[in-house]
Amino acid sequence: MRLYTILKKIIDKTVRSGGVTGEDGGHKMGLSWNGSKVIVGIDNNAAVKTLVDTSMAIDYIIEQGTSGGWNYVKYNNGRAEAWRSTTSSNLGTSGTVNGFYYRIYRIDIPTGIFKSITDAHADCYWGTGTSWASARSVATTYFEAIYFSNQNGGAGSFFHRVTGRWK
Image 1 (cartoon, rainbow, N blue to C red):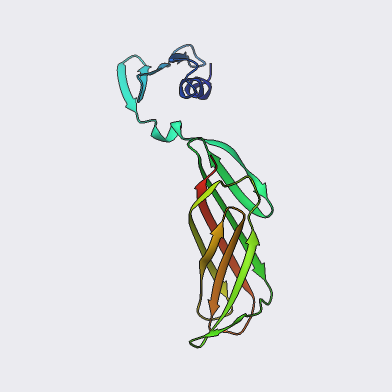
Image 2 (image 1 turned 120 degrees about the vertical axis):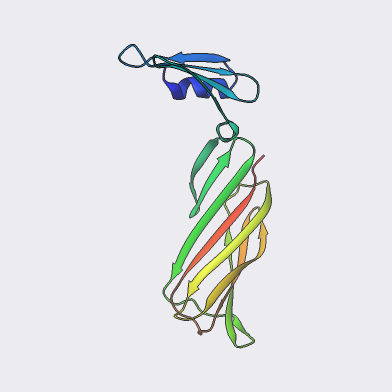
């Protein structure tokens, strides 16, 4: 059996142990689960035992893809992440505040990615001078950001990132 296959079966709790033998018939490796760690036994003409922390292996990606221009990842523990970047050759402004131009822009988040939102961020490169962005209002189905620039309109790249729960 391949090492990945055994590790996945241990994580899925369908087996408690398994072994791998190298192609040359030597270099044997055994894996077993003690309830919190995978115990790895390696026999390469020497008795070596190592404990491997499996906290990362227990939380693994169960779904990933692209939907509605958003890239997303869903993890086994219920956490979800989605991110998107857009560009504009000349994004117009919504108004000014304290000498800076701003634009409020809302984009849809595809349904089914989030059941709740825990964090959201926006950033941008807009125009040729100073610019920044902030998440203004975020729900499971939309992301509203506000972008600031010292320039009235102009080309830009806009970045959005959301984390939350899918279950």
